[in-house]
Image (cartoon, rainbow, N blue to C red; front, top):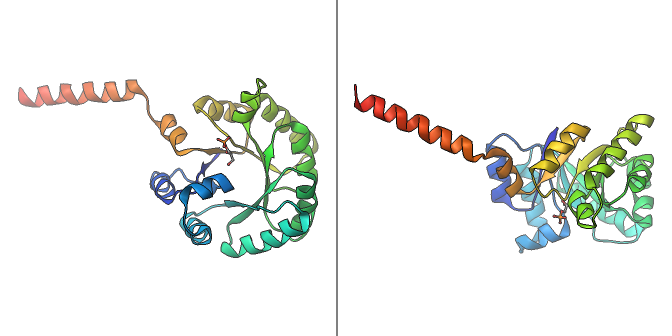
Length: 216
Ligand code: G3P
């Protein structure tokens, strides 16, 4: 399973990269706007810093303007994946971008039927927003499970990129289902790593060793 970081923050990107856990990055207009400053400069730095796919999202809502924006976004680096919203105009843009061999990530996906349409039109990734689906009182992971079955039934190569991740169980369940990628907020990657019994156990080992050394 690939781990992407869901952020536009360079410090977080560098830190997770140093851990050796960074397979890619996903951004969106909200995450970009949180960083402030010149978004073009920020996007370039992110593309340089990441040895893997970087999703940059279009702002346009007509297919012609999305395609124009996508052609600009891909100039930021060879690793750019253009994020397209799951709306009818987005699907029209997706078809053209697929024909131009531009990598795409169809975002704001909330149902298996939306994922099926994106896969049929050649999306590289689809991003089900599991946390937001859970927030509706439905099951985000059940949606992902259904997407996996549909894609496997028909041999779609579109990758399932689980997004809107809220906690480590979303990651574990993604692994059990066989999702291709999870995109994680920085805090969730840290949560995956830490366990209070690891810290407690290490403290006890070091204290015992210290006492042993003093008695030598
Ligand atoms: O990047 C898309 C997605 O991960 C957004 O997550 O937390 O805004 O629902 P969230």
